[in-house]
Amino acid sequence: MVIWAMITDVIDDAEVKNGVREDGTIYSVYSFARKIGQALSSGMVGGLLSLIGYTTTTAFDPDVTLGIFRISCIVPMIGFVLVALALIFLYPLSKSKVEANVAYLKAKREGNK
Image (cartoon, rainbow, N blue to C red):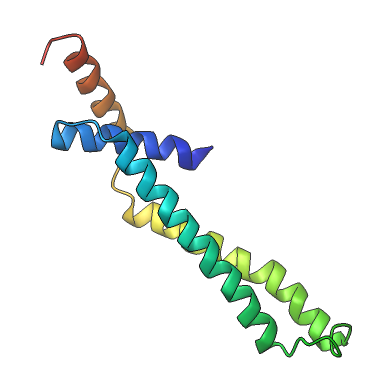
């Protein structure tokens, strides 16, 4: 839900900057990026399983099961931290900027700008 709310904020910001509302373009770029991420994560899982030595014969080896546990817990945690840091330091829209954009677009739609 948070991502969808952020996308609408990005759409509003793009409209303020460019003067044109580009919902379809922004949603399609987001959808494409999400699909690329899903494909890369699927490939990464296979690579990580190979890295810990997973095969059909070693599937229940204690070292392999511990590796699977670490992959399923630690890798998502690292990803979450990286995304959180990116949002904190790279995401350009603060609450005040979003509110300013909303006020600007409201005034524009009411014919005041």
